[in-house]
Image (cartoon, rainbow, N blue to C red; front, side, top):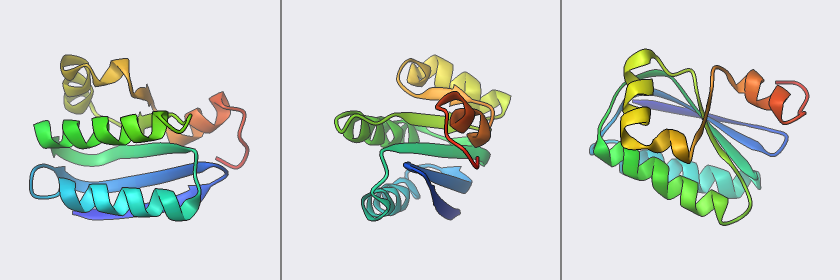
Length: 116
């Protein structure tokens, strides 16, 4: 599993390559939280294009990031999901709290940010 993060405007963009399961959620959580604080970001975009599998611990990790970021007035987005992952988001109710879009560029355009 690999986590690559970049900062753009007030967004932390987190690209995850691999599975999000009970083996990786602690690493993802720690990396995201540390990177979010360091970037002084307001919003987070999870790029899920290279995530092949996610279990309930991944759902919990995303809910935890949503609660923390929403509490600071920010938004959480998920982009690049394939059909199986999108179904998981629908079934679990994540689509009710995490905003799903096709790409990070779509999120930036929607929010009026440049240089997506």
